[in-house]
Image (cartoon, rainbow over all chains, first blue to last red):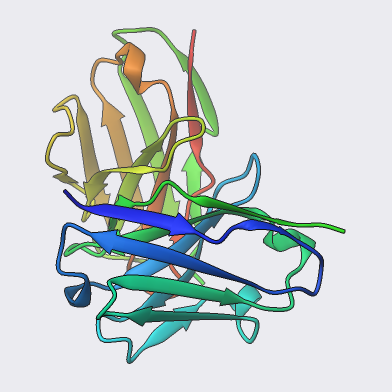
Length: 118
Length: 107
């Protein structure tokens, strides 16, 4: 069974940092692109970042470029999101999602809540 | 960036109704469009990929069509478990983008 489990969310002050993790199981992690997608409270979905299966290519939405870094450790079946210089508008539930063979997000984690507030 | 415009933003319908949701892309995206269902407090669930490919386990009352800039998600006979918010998403080019969502409510 494919599983994605996020962790690392919490309350952080504006300007602070947080590192999210996503533990994957039930599939060959190193064969898939993985993404982070977020959802602000009461709002729609927003793609945040993508990383290629081997970690060689990374893509970001403009609003997080230079502040967030996506990475992965295929030996540990894990995905990460390092978030620096956090802003109130980064407050959201962050999901990791597997990118399937037709480029859609075919499996999602349960999400982890990040709250940026003083 | 490719913008996706969903309509309507909300719809009130009864069990057994046929519901159609549209998604229009600001430029051509071939068939690189997916549809998701999200219930409150839950992660989104993939229903359809590549505009019309129904995911395994998704009921046959769901169908998708379209290519280029205009796409539709149809629920042929609405069931109680289908009341949720639906999102389209384009996978043609980065940044990947989602539509604003369509909330399907009970009439």
